[in-house]
Structure formats: structure tokens, C-alpha cells
Image 1 (cartoon, helix red, strand yellow):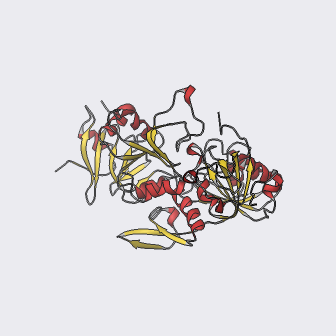
Image 2: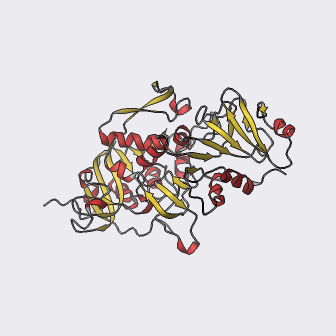
Image 3: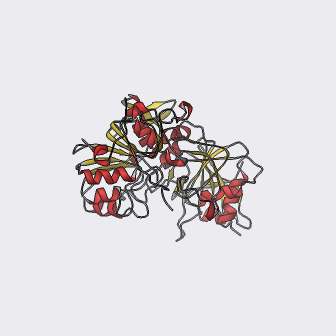
Length: 226
Length: 213
């Protein structure tokens, strides 16, 4: 019997190696896999490259992982926001590498990785600082920048409902990067608010097919904020 | 009297016809939605995967699973849809948005826009979706004050700040005027705010302001 549901967080995090590239879903706190990030902090992997839209806020979650010196490099679109204090400190001290990627290019690089596309041309960032040093080609009279796929060793995902095959649904704006990242890692781990029997998610309602998911853990996170 | 912030947002809203798919940037552009009359169907997009975004909810009706790109709680209108980030930016980059309205630090006479990094030395500026929106929307309108707080023109010959995108702005709405950005010509005055003279607009613009032919 296929059963991707793990018993505890240690099992969910087993085998994540030092030096891994970790894709972390979420936009704001919605769809953010808080419990898995805590699990990764506990698990101990270091020298990580983290791919996420933001660079963490406050001193918990991703910010905590960074503050503990476990993140070598962050790849994101929006490093600075209200409360990104840990990133600011580390960045100013030269203790973390930063790669800024336009949000749509970030999503597409991850999508490409999951879809077996090694690189693509995009009009985004052509003629700007973020396009510098990249191959530029003209299509339909417009300059386009070559961007490469961005695969992960691990993806950490937050879902709404999951079954034992790893089929996932999401709630509200909680989809964001999650379904894209789920396709792009060698090891995709999902925390789900609800575990439901196989077949309870109607085939039409599955957003992430279980083929993309390796491990599922139930985390009753409640509301993402407020 | 120049337009105040509410009048500026209302002025943009006036020009958005029924049926358009529109993305509004953070800050003043967000206010544009409040000025679309309820009987006019305009569909608002949010980068984090929403089409059919409605107004902010009442404090007792907040759904914590539903936020916009500014991370504020929002609502959905009947007919709304939700999707992931790659689809959301396919909508943007694929040219499916009729309009994007953004703020800016500077707009140049050739349509260049600078709105993400405040200097070449800022090594960790937040770009978010700005470069995708500016490159991808069918039309890019900018809504901003005509000058900085200390009176420096924001409509310029050449942007001094790092570019977000080159040659993409087609119209600028300010507290003083509405200006078209015309290829090969530059800023063309479409409308002055009530009581604002052409001389004043020209004095506060660091590039030629042409009158419509």
C-alpha cells in the first residue's frame, strides 16, 4: 500500500543533507509551511540555499533558520520588507549571499525545473540591472533575457488537504508558490491541515497530483495569521 | 487646484472601461479600485494568484487565507478564480492584463520607468513583481506625484534611478496633469488639473511637455 503520510517530523525531515537547495512555499504567511521550517531547524542541515519569495520576518521560521547561520544563500524577489531584521543584519555583515530574481521569473524558473525545461527567454528585466551579464536575444523585435531553471533538492509545501498518495489541495491565496515548487524538487514534503481518505478529494479538485509529493505530515496550523 | 490623492485615483478610474483585467500596484494605485462604479465590471488581478479581487473586508469578516500582493486581507467577487504563481505571472507576462497601474520614482520621456531601487548602491532592493508587470501588461500607466517632496521633478528626460523596464509607460497621472507618453515625441499634455497652468506643469517637468497637435 502506498502511504506517504509520515508519523512524525523527524521522519518528514529524514535525509536532508548539508548544502541542499530548499524551496519554501508561501506568500506572506499564507501557504507558508511553518511547521516544516521548524522541523528543518530541529533537523540540523546547514550550508543551505533557500529559495522563497521573501527573506523571513521577525526572528522565527525562516528568519530563525538564517539567524542560526544555516543559510548560505537566499534566492528571492523581495528581501526587504517590514520586519526582515535578521536578513538585514546578516546581509550587512556579509554573512549571507543574495540573489534577487523578479517574482515572475522566480516562479517560471521553478516551473521550468519541474517541467524539464533547462532555460528560457523572458522579456522581464531586459535592459535593467537584473538582466546584466545574461545572454540577450531579440524575439518579435524585443530583447529577452536567458534565465535558467531553478530546481531544489527539497521543497517544503503547505497544503489544505492531502491523502496518502500525496494528492494536495490548497485554500484561498495559499497556493502561490506551493504547487510550482512541489514539482521542482527531488524530495517534496508537504504539511497539510487535513489528511483525508484516498478518494475523498475529487479528481477534479486535485491541484497537486501525488506524483510530485514524497512525504505528507498532518499539521493543524489553524489560520495563517490573526 | 491640483488633484489630491483621492482625485488622482478617481481620475485614473474614470479611464478604465468595463471588461478590463487590471493589476494595481501597492500604495496610491490600490485606491483606484475604490473609484470604479459598482455597475462597471472591471476584474482586478493580484500577483499571488487572484482574479476577481474585491474590496477590503469588514474587520469581523476577514478571511486569513486570503491576502493580496500587499499582504492585506481582501475579498473575492462572484466569478473570482484562484491559481498558483506560475499561472499568475503567465497572465502578467503573457500579455493578458489590459492594464497595470504602478507608482514610480521616475518616468522618462521615452517611457522608461524606475520604481524598484532608490540608487545604484542599494545592493538589496526588493523587486517583487514590478519587472514582470512592467514588461508584460498591455498598458502601463503610472500614478504618482508630479515632483518629490522636496520639489524635484519625477518626469525626466532620462531616469537617474535603476530602470524597472525600458520604454513601457504609455500614460502618467499626477497631481498636476494627465500626460501621454508618445513614442518619438515624449510627454504630451492630455489634461491639466483644475486651475493648474501649462507653465506650472512645464516648470515642474524635467523634459519637454508638448501640447496635443
